[in-house]
Length: 313
Ligand code: PMV
Image (cartoon, rainbow, N blue to C red; front, side, top):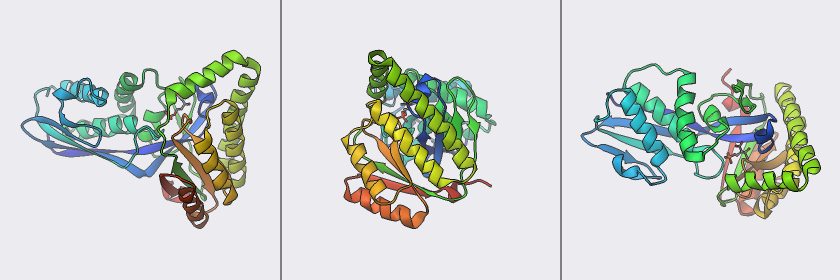
């Protein structure tokens, strides 16, 4: 084994969350300015250093790092190196439990670091197979969207059960992301939608289909660099997510603030009931203004990125 490192990105869902659980499409974006790095150096013991867990690999069983620890043990076995000593340092700018794909990003960077350390080429299919295993252990029944996006360099068009399709970032526009400071509750939020579906199948099915339709129009708007249309579809989706009961006061306040400050569209991102919201701005100057207003309105952290910086060609 040699010293090596692996990298991954945060992800956000641009549009389509919740409806994606029921077979509708979603679009997720890698946020390359919010990174996670896993670095491996040789050592006599097997040591993890991170903000989520610090200690020996062995002692991680039963902690919230257990899923990644199992992944590491499986990787060591794969490389016939179960007794190999190492220090794995994980450096993450992703807030955990905010719908940014923290666990999938961690798994992605760890797999990349081990393959690099053992000088073995890693295909995308192999990477996704490794991360699927750890995401299953951590989340139960993940859609695969997080793993596909935290390891991608382009937006992903995603339909459950199908391979994700990379699409292009638009040429212009800036996205603002703001954290409510409240941990998102994916399981609770997904359960709330399922309950709505049982209680009022007609209205709930209509909301789910409307989000799917907004996602189709959003993809068209992305392809045509039509930011106004993209913003409109984000607003439509937010209206339906509200109807599904997955927004909350903190999200609604930040979304209203973004709109009052000229956002072309604003919505929750991820599971809702906490977590983050996103707002679309024409350019970086407008985004900075929206970002300041969101901070004033109580956002605990904000990020922004220009689509043009994210384009790979
Ligand atoms: O909050 P996140 O990033 O885990 O997103 C959840 C997205 C849902 O559509 C609500 C659930 C899912 O499995 O796709």
